[in-house]
Image 1 (tube, rainbow, N blue to C red):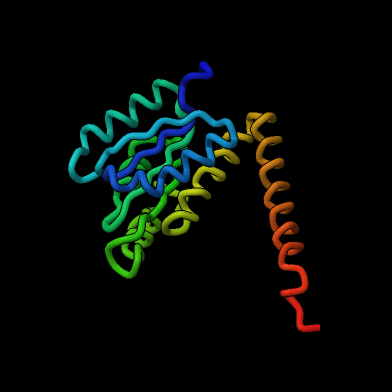
Image 2: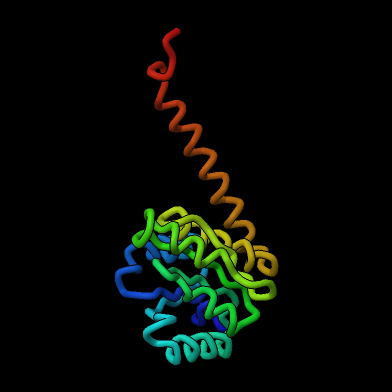
Length: 171
C-alpha cells in the first residue's frame, strides 16, 4: 500500500455527521494515519455504500469507522460486507440524545461484530485511537506515536492539576 492510500475509511450517514466525525479525522491526522471520508447512507444509498466498501478493500483500507444516528444501520451494513474491523460511532439526535443509535450500533448478531464506542464527540475521537491501535499491531512507528499521545495526555492532566493550585484545597 502506498503512503497516499488511506488506511481508514470514515463513512457517515449524512453530511451533517461530518461535524462530529471530523474529530476522528483530526485525531488520525495527529497520529499520521491516512484516511478518507464519504457520505454513504445504509438506507438511502445502499448500493453506493457497498461499492465504497468494496473499493476501499481493493485499495487497502484496513479499518472502517462508521458514524450514524437514529436507526444507525451503517456500521452493521459495512460489517456484513467486510471481515475487516468496523468501528461504530453512534451519533446524537433521535431518542434520548442518541440512545437509539447506540443500541442500533451495538446490537449486532453473533459473527458480524461492530466495535461500538460512546455516543458523540468522545466516541468519534476514540474511533481514531481504536483504529490506530488496530493498525499499530503491525506498525511500530504508529505504536510509538500512540504511546507519545498517551504520555501527552498524562502531562496535560498534571499541568491542569498544577494550574488548579491552591484553589483545589481549603487547607
